[in-house]
Image (tube, rainbow, N blue to C red; front, side, top):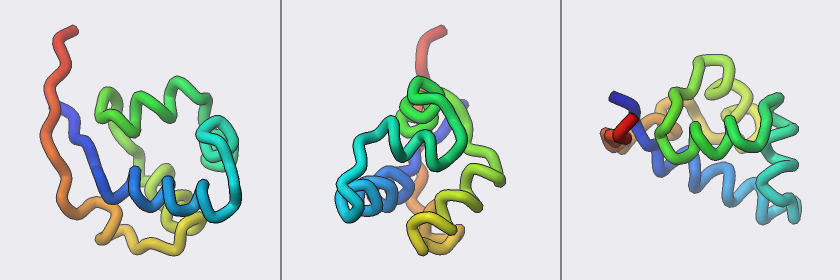
Length: 77
């Protein structure tokens, strides 16, 4: 089972809007491809500790805030 983290999506959305970035530019700044980025945002693949540390550094959000309020998601594979 994977998880969707609404706080990560919100933090990255605020970050992108503040710098007028498109999602592919945010993915580049996180060191990942666009499809990987979207899969992680939607809960289709998991965030790594390294990903969360990078997001925290970029957005200024704490790790605890980023992972709070996670929601379980199931995708038929």
